[in-house]
Amino acid sequence: MIPVVDLDSIRVCWLQLEKEGFVLYGFLLYTNADTGIWSFIHNGGMLDLDHLTGDCCALFVLDRPPRDFVADAQQNDHVWYRYFSESYGVRPATAAEATTVAHRPVTQGAGFSSNSLHSLYGCVVVIGSENQVAAESLLGGPAIDRDEIAKVLVNFGLDYSAVPCITWFRSLDDTAFEVVDLKEITDQHSARNFLRRYFTSATFNQLFSVVRV
Image (cartoon, rainbow, N blue to C red; front, side):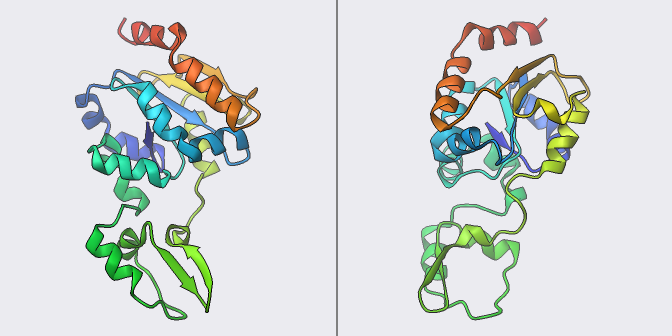
């Protein structure tokens, strides 16, 4: 699974992705209004789907990666970590960085660059006397950009009513050849059950035959 900030970031890395051995490409499209899918993704689901999709399938998502996914990606030299992690400005700090930042007082009006926020990932910032805030929450911008979702839909000949869905495609210049409707997912548990069942099904495995024709 590959979190991305927009469609253009995939275009920039397309040749590298092909060299990685991917043959099937897709987008898992949802917003935080689709609470069942969003909750699943942010409670271990992104790692689940990364495992289930395998090494030949690149499933993109327009969402900020959870910390467990980031840590796993760094440890295993994941394709996301190599090509897309800088776009998010969030990387697990080294032990030395984490210790330094954790003991650095933050004064009122202090500013942070995107580089300094890399080191803040995984730390807690104390605001005032006792209000603790997860450091990564200081990162600006929405976790899910609906405008970017709309651009992806237009690119593949779909409209916004298709969300939430999975759209499968051969290339960024092609229309979607398969769309999986996810509107029946109502909560985190139904998301987990549906997506695990789908990605271990003959229906999913047959997609590889389609793209290799």
